[in-house]
Image (cartoon, rainbow, N blue to C red; front, side, top):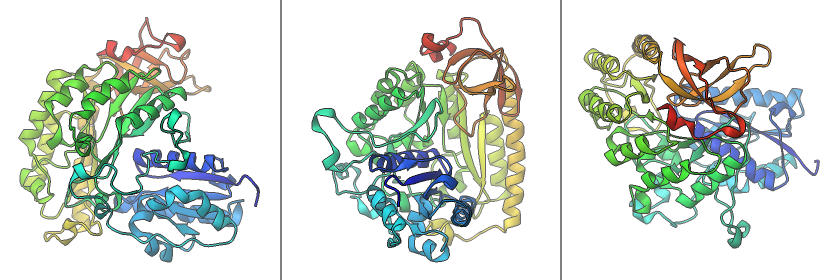
Length: 493
């Protein structure tokens, strides 16, 4: 085996997984591994899987199978499954998937280098045995800080021997891309008990990162060219509750926005029942915090939401959106909804579609219900046949597509701030994201007369057209570029 073995991290699923992969990459790089982008060029392919819903599980298994084929055709010697699917199914997944040389859970991350070397040397590593991670920490959030040594991927936890007291906490992370934005994990786990969701069982109870750790990582990212921080967690509105201060996020946001080099801060994963007026005020009036609200509604029928073990209804959600738009009339709002939940009636679907029409949301992800192992809803009566769920998904998706396109068209004439993310040297096309557009899933903005721009520039532009959820905007005079970049985002509101 070469002295510097190579490893590729293949990441599936959400931006939280991206943070976890970059932490793993940082650990491995520190311990003598060479990071490569393509699994075919690596001695070991580490697949960071997603286990959220049925389709995500299938995608993860397909990716592991494809990586396994590289052992026959490329230099790849081993394939290792990590991430949510591995944590959730462990030894069962290993038994069903011999193409994977190891299936490792979150508790293995700190020792990942040793495990991978063992595998390359011809040894074996015991597959992960799943357990309910909610039981690993005290039930009371206030008792969690400092309780035990529970592995929290993406929190940058380093062994005590690696911490130099005089230099402050180290950042265990290596960037796996060059995008001018990066996810930054502020918490892990969830204390909610939504009937359809298994995430708390394999991600564990809610744990906030300490503010100084988050700020240290933010500065580290800024030093590496990141211009936008995308704050991620399973439930951002709970940040600070286990640290004894539910207003901690309101104090953290201005500090993050003030980090040198950071132009924008984007907040994600907000629970509607936990959004406080004080948080709205800070998000609305802090320079650099973009007018973007990722709110998890899931449905709009009150009775069905109670069956889901959630709060709210159409009227209360519209009231919340009214509070947002009272402060930020041009705010971007996205959400996800589930259709076909057990017991959902046609009246419930009508209520949802009525809400979506009134809500004027920028982007809506529509998911069909599927049973998730270990959830309350798995035992519910009133299950719908697959063809009924598929029909409702198609119907609501078509409605959402029409409404989202209209919402984008309504933005024609608005002034937006766009972070440049791509430049095609062949066509000269420049594109990026406006404040109202989150990474990967919320559409893009194509910039006209933007051929002189560079990736990472933040420019003001006027929306002149739209295509579906995507915007087309003309760069305005007085734009910010290169050394002259400032927090122009506030000037665009």
